[in-house]
Amino acid sequence: MLTLEGLSKTYKTGDTALSDVSLVVPKGQILGLIGPSGAGKSTLIRCINRLVEPTKGKVVLGDVNLVGLGKRELRRQRRRIGMIFQEYALVERLTVMENVLSGRLGYVPFWRSYLRKFPKSDIQRAYQLLDRVGLLEHASKRADALSGGQRQRVGIARALAQNPELLLVDEPTASLDPKTSRQIMRLLTEICQETNLPAIVNIHDVPLAQQFMQRIVGLRAGRVVFEGTPDELTQNALTTIYGEEDWNAMRQGDQEQAEAEADAKARMAVLSL
Image (cartoon, rainbow, N blue to C red):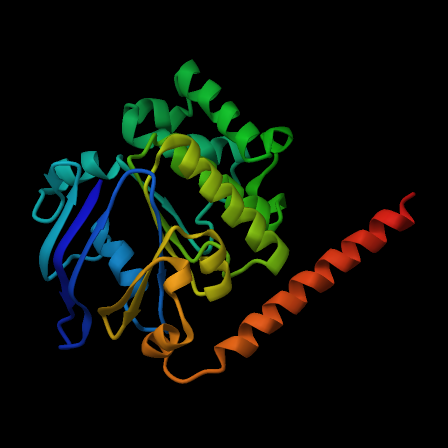
């Protein structure tokens, strides 16, 4: 379980990115962070694993407060947190398998990682994860030979290779087309449910968040202005988070796009008969 208590971040310039954020994310829950650009979503995720240093507050994972830990202990605790990035953060010249195994770097001696001699158990686990994300046949390909959706699947497998207790996901669909976005979100939610893994997902696509998230938190100017289920994310709530917008028209447009994709898929199936 993850607990945030009064988490705040103010930069040296005086700009406040987060202000008194308190949340609890129990095991198995998938929480979506939504809000306009500059609302503090990415900062919140990075404060949790201390890629950004909080100004004040607590980040408690299990029974350990990550805020205030020294560098050595922080490195050890970070192994408990898997991170999936918007731009994949893969080593392009390495193979898919090598990228997945990089999730084990915090667990093996330096000489093993340098020589890429990982234990057999780690290699077996990496193959299992590649099979789970549908990339087993691509294990020996270089990362730069993959599509965007495939690269994101490698990122998921790499994060899971850590055997994390928490998953942090920063805009996983921002660079993907609508169909691939839904496939990635479906894969993430299925894996979290299978492993009872809590996750925080920074997501800019509101309809996608409503479709896949169990709980949604809306940020505006660094503050939590909404917290509830997808069904509770009404037009009034969205206006509180984002300001005035024709949210019904947006939902209608998303539905029409989904129907068009389904129609195109059906036509392709007929042509292939």
